[in-house]
Image 1 (cartoon, helix red, strand yellow):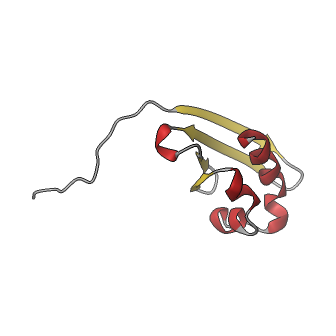
Image 2: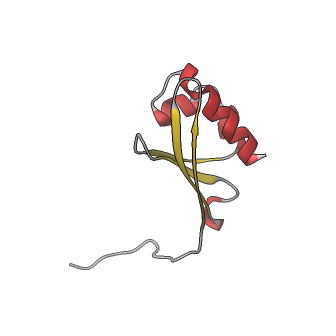
Image 3: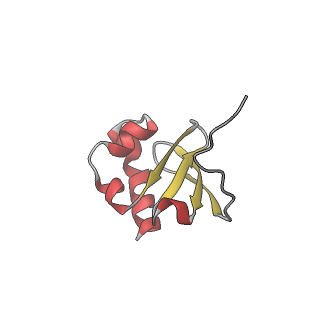
Length: 88
């Protein structure tokens, strides 16, 4: 079978693994920085298997983190605070 690749690139990335316990939940994250994301980072929630490419504007978007990580507003408060620190 012939494949039509849109791209097949290899790129060095910087990966950071972060785990912290909040008042409601424990957060286990893998954060990948790459030139491919145009200043944003890929944030993977290892526990729940969900991920998103996130920038400072996304963190402030009402309901965005709740939707992406399938969590309640209360459950994303500490995650939002951490991502604000990380991205600023």
